[in-house]
Length: 461
Image (cartoon, rainbow, N blue to C red; front, side, top):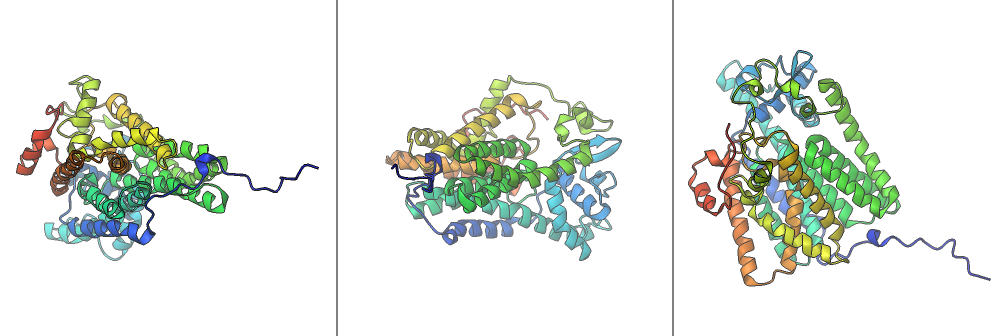
């Protein structure tokens, strides 16, 4: 009689077996770079760094708490802010930004308002500074600095799968924080820093554990919550990586993919509800260009009207290696394609599936921002390519992975020099994140600017 194997455990798929970590560490050690970075940002958040972009979000937060609406046309700071980042629907003004992050900000500002603080106390300049300063500090520390630190925690967890010395991975993690736009934008209210933390952690959760069993379902659901929330806060980068992680999870286990989708549902539903209060549908403001060209809008003026100045293919070059380019400002990421390619060639590498996800998402975002968006001046008066910040920690993980193979001393020297150049950009950007590099004459920026591969800019506003 043939033996009965009906009760034998089903072996996991190869893609779902627990990965071998060449350099495992505990969670406490992984948290050290993150805690150092969070404490540093907490010290650096003053004075406030604000812009029309920030005021647009802050007016929404203030309107939710003080008037119970997403409309900003009754905000006392609408005129003084001078923010162009507004849209008009049914005759009422709203921020043109996705509403989930301001809703989270309202959860922070609400208790402060009940305690007597006001976002915009316009009785006198002294009253404004005295009241706005603590509110800004709380919003930036809790909603920007902590997610930025979370990105480093997730990154250090990911680097367990890279076969370099543990002490070196520790230094690489904190070094990336200090030499990237995580530092630049970690001191001002923005959506990209939040998305960077959420996506890096979601990636780490998928990478570091199997997706079967109760624990696997919980991990997949947690990753779904993180990636889904990122998709509502930074729609292009968050949405692309959310889909990439869903595909990765589905390859490993259908049940895990279901848990991931269920976890994503709550933040996505919140977005649909809040966005519908603005645009009348879950679609973002960008899908309604007429809402931005109302009478009196900056975007309806001659200076605000976009004119194509260079071919889109040329703009892709500028996006990567121009004066504000992604690889110009964070040159260490030039090592990322090397790490991605070499990882893909190793079929049993723990980070191989993740390399495919990061590569595809990066190509999609570069294509979207170079050829898909209506404008090529979308960064406005801001430092570097902030729209690619959400995927930068993951790209850096593969830059670090390249060190497993690039063992010649010259490569190590170039690697360190790239991080040092990135550190100059990061610190200079942190001083004023809402300023374009081409418009600044700081000596450190002039020095590192000599290494720019494509020194021309198409920005005309």
